[in-house]
Amino acid sequence: MNARPDSSEFTGARDDGIAKGDTLLEVNNVSLSFGGVKAITDISFDIKKGEIRAIIGPNGAGKTSMLNVINGFYTPQQGTITYRGVPRRAMRTTDAARQGIARTFQNIALFKGMSTLDNIMTGRITLQKRNLLWQGLWAGPAEREEIEHRRTVEAIIDFLEIEHIRKTPVGRLPYGLQKRVELGRALAAEPSLLLLDEPMAGMNLEEKEDMSRFILDVNNQFGTTIALIEHDMGVVMDISDRIVVLDYGRKIGDGEPDDIAKNQDVIDAYLGVPHEG
Amino acid sequence: MLYREAGDFKTSYAADLQTFPIKSERILFWSFTAVAFLVVPFFINDYWEKSILVPFLVWSMVALGLNILTGYCGQVSLGTGGFMAVGAFACYKFMTAFPDLNIMICILLSGLVTAGVGVLFGLPSLRIKGFYLAVATLAAQFFLVWMFNKFAWFYNYSASGQISAPERSIFGIAVTGPNSAPWATYLTCLTIVFVFAWVARNLTRGRVGRSWMAMRDMDIAAEIMGVSPFNAKLSAFAVSSFYIGIAGALFFSVYLGAAEVTEAFGIDKSFTALFMVIIGGLGSILGSFLGAAFIILFPVLLKNLMVGYLGWPTDLAAHFQIMIVGGLIIFFLIVEPHGLAQLWRLAKEKLRLWPFPY
Ligand SMILES: Nc1ncnc2c1ncn2[C@@H]1O[C@H](COP(=O)(O)OP(=O)(O)OP(=O)(O)O)[C@@H](O)[C@H]1O
Ligand SMILES: [Mg+2]
Image (cartoon, rainbow over all chains, first blue to last red; front, side, top):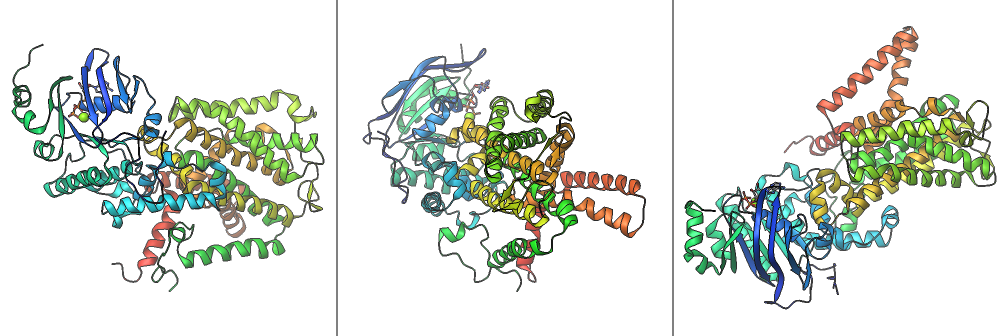
């Protein structure tokens, strides 16, 4: 059921048996609260295979929490998530990773003590199979496997144009490059669903343009489905196929960029019109 | 032209994955190894064996083990002495219960037993970290020492409470007991340490090592990438304890010959091991050796210098030595937390670019 890509060449996204345009993920009536704080209230939306689905909203709207629900890091009090046709509420994050959900983080969460190469290699951890004993002996299968995956990772490094920092410990890299390495690490998992939490935050214009191009290329070349949280409205309107708008944990808009731009609730939320209830 | 990468281009990933990608470094390593295996055994005497080489090798094994757990996987442990005791007592029980069992097998089995015990005491790491884990492993240290004291079965009901290693041989040559020759004990330890250093290197450069380091650097992100904390942490405890158990077995059977648990495997051993990995370099195989060499050899050197050369009284020299080592530990913690291994790396980088630093 879980067709693994041939790791000797980078296919970008694994084959999850879902046709382009069909529903890959469905969020049904999900509510999540932390003690008294309601982060998400009764939200439903879907993500279709092959699209770039933006999730936008003012600070504290519940966007990051939504991604955390999708990849099993938070368990909602109500509602279900249906991923590839299988409904569930709770899920272990490691299982979500194995099923092809990969992500980047709003506050960079790279492995600081490791090189760019090792960070991206770590993205392939669920695809590597050799056990401890083989690894200890290295010779034969373990080395072959390592080289195979290294080849794929080099393809990603080429794709993201970070050849020059391959061996640099990521802690020493500038912020923009760290964001790029983090994207690489997520891509290395050949995800079905790629969750990007503000991949362009804190970047200058040129870096933003680069990052937008990479995101579009990932989507076009590999057909990877992407859920994107982003504050830069220009970018969002440009690159996303459909947009969900959250405000105070509620969904206030859902549709194509043009509709969203005209949606009065959305305009109010962004202009900070006082909000009742 | 001592240390050059120029003209040393990698044409395959296999070549790039080598332990020593630079040729001069490879040559240095293999010459060193050749001398250790082929030359030293002919010249080793009792003093060099008992005071320098064998303790250095055994402690390198301990440091390798602790470095896997603390340096690579980020789980602080103060239970090293206790785990060494498990290895030692397991070895003793195997040697006495099965007199015909080859000593090498006894030692390896002791490692396996210790790995099991390590996993058991590693279970709390799934819930707690940092300081709290350190305290939990400290409890393991005291519990294990208490246990080996309390239950006479472990020391075969001997009146003194000591365990002593009977004579065992490999290829007809005694490696334990009073009749073992210095070169034989040295070669036994060297072989084991060499093989397992290589294994450690392999483990740390592949998937398993990356899962350990990912746990260390950012456990939540690691889990979201699909690294199972259960597998990563417990495998680190298992492998680490395996190494420390083997070291404990060697320490008792090959080096000491006889041991009393409180004295041989007390809390001071746990700290010694921790100092080694801190000074040598957390998360570095080379660092484990450098740290062990430093902690074992530096006092010997100082003592020879102060007592032998300067003629100071021994007790003064001993105090002085403790102060210097303590001072150096503080120095490393503050100035170079990546230890001697990092200094070596920096020196290499300088050398590589010399004489044109651009
Ligand atoms: N682990 C947590 N514990 C308690 N409250 C939380 C937790 N995570 C999120 N919240 C709260 O839930 C609400 C939504 O937070 P979330 O991080 O999802 O917002 P966001 O839309 O990503 O905002 P931003 O644009 O600032 O990143 C906030 O009020 C936040 O304080
Ligand atoms: Mg957020």
